[in-house]
Length: 159
Image (cartoon, rainbow, N blue to C red; front, side):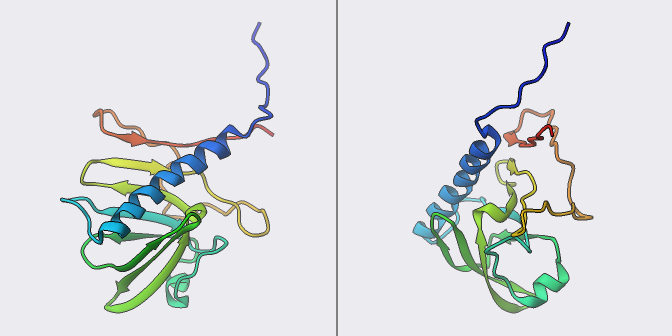
């Protein structure tokens, strides 16, 4: 006989998600403090454009109505990090833009210089409803066979 799966009364998935998003905050905080990226490090950060607290130009929301990925590499400015999220200046089609992104809106973080990656489950919007997956969303599970530093997070709750 198989033992029935018991739902946890401790929200482990939320605790792990929060801890991993704190990793992103710590990395960005160190870059903000030093004012530059060390060596060849650079970051691809994917986030939900409609998530609570996201403040990006309207033209970007229109172009990326669900999710977008930004690159922090050569041309960025005014990177500021606090315990809730970060803000950064970036150019899109040579138009300077200021973005405010809460850590809770982030769905992916990748540093290709060292092949380090974090993936987060989709967030709920302000009404508590899950977002529909974007057409450009990658699979929820990242399989890596080469021994690189990839952490995939895909928690599913049984209802």
